[in-house]
Image (cartoon, one colour):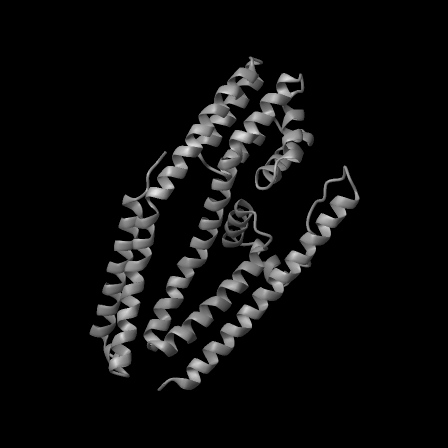
Length: 313
């Protein structure tokens, strides 16, 4: 290849990034295992943080003082990831450098710049995807949550006690989120504010309905058991409907990803049949503008397909 030194640097940098990520995953898993052992050997005690040693603390302290750092911190908190804003920014920057060198060596240096710009969007999209994934997991646990709350309130327990009991019985993410609500209630926060913050962290129609039901019952003191029983049946039906809709739209989602990948495949074919063709094409302003327009059209097609396949249940 013409860009063999550049490709070697890119592969080396990518290997280093993967090594750092591997060490992070290993240390996080080890800390979680120690926390699990501690919980199993100390029955009745709830474990707090995993105790993982934070990395890049200097960058993290500086970043938290900025508006960007605070926004990243709020997004990470909504995803449930064991990650600090400083670690996230360092990993994203390392990934962008790896993308630039690797893609630039395989295609052309101009494509490396485009890949780095796409990587900036990809870092934010990763957090949004993790938040959506966590919200979906929480929604799937809502029928079980309402059932636990209904049983607890029917047994004569107060709503605050029922929420704390549900936090201990349910798995994450519902258990973790309800534990946070219970902690906020324990330090004197009102039921309305604690549940409203929960709805803000994990926005969904189902959770808004549940929060509204609990808040109104807490204010008016009405019969919450029958409301929770009816809500449980409704959430079970919506859960099945959402699963059917997701299955039917899976092919459309795969198509939205296949279209841009085909474009990249064609570029590789062109560069393979005529080595250096991409360098010549991006060597002029007109060629660079054509590449940008082509990538923009692929991006518009991707978002339009995703938009048309989005069904609100």
